[in-house]
Amino acid sequence: MAQMMKAAVFEAIKKIVVKEVPIPVIGPDEVLIKVKYTGICGTDWSIYNGWYSAEKLPMIGGHEFSGVIAETGKEVTRVKTGDRVTADINMACGTCFYCMNGASLQCPNFTQLGIHTDGSYAEYIKAPARLIHVLPDKLSFEEGAFIEPVSCCIHASKAMNAKLASSVAVIGCGLGVLHARMAVLRACAPVIVIGDNKKRLNIAKKMGADFILDVNEVADPVAEVKKLTGGRGADYVIEAVGKVKTYQQAWEMLRPGGTLSAFGITGGDDVMEIRPFDFVLGEKKITGSCAGAGPDWPESITLIENGRIDPKPLFSMKVPLEDLEWALHELRRDPDLFKIFVSPEITKREIL
Ligand SMILES: [Zn+2]
Ligand SMILES: [Zn+2]
Image (cartoon, rainbow, N blue to C red; front, side, top):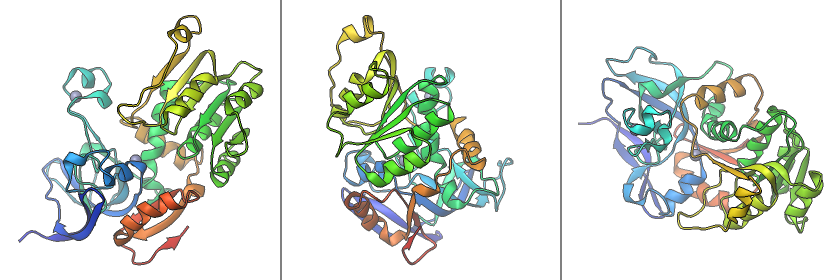
């Protein structure tokens, strides 16, 4: 009989069941990882509600994880049992037009661990060995489970490619906080963060943002950003909310010739209005960014390992696997919560 493990299975829309399932069987080029922590992500909420990956259910969720290698396939040489690791979740075919042109995130056969295939809300997860990244000793397992979201911000930052001393406005204070930090690291100024949560905005300020604008207090963020940027608008604007209204604001607060970084995920059918005039005479540009993949991962590790990004102020709580569904709702109820880690190895909630 197959060996069993505990897992939180997304059984159907709005239904998570913690139960015994078989431990994944690894192929010759795969590894089995004993999971330490998995960070809860907005994507998990979308899967839970059936807005994303609904056709994949039942499935074990969880894609921002760290753990220890428990077993390696017989062809695996680059990592070994006992290594502390995380894994790039992006699995592309490697042979199509997009993969051959260095754009693996556009691969039509692209899947992501924990989003399209079984993930890490379990005692074990399997992953292709080629996607494994060993954690430096300095990194905690919690930080190891936070490499994925940082890698997404790195991918967007590289696509946007902000110049030194250029102004950057970030709309959103979820991962927007990290986007602001990335802009500070690129020596952009001023860095302006617009959001609706005081606690998160203050974290952005501590991470180096020059101005924070609370939309509960600032009636017209577009006018305010223009005021802070010599009346022109920002050189770069990052939309990290995912709503048409905030995309529209982002476009309006962008100066002529500026670049909008599209990061927040809207509904697939949402439409924003843009005047072609703004592209032609205004020479405005847009860059998109879907995830962190390939080199974004070791870069994420480097920035955390060397203290350029300290994600610890964003860590809110650890909960046992059994509390995953509770925690998904709690994150909606209490906007002061930022990152909640789920662990199959703990039995009590712990505030960080
Ligand atoms: Zn995520
Ligand atoms: Zn491909």
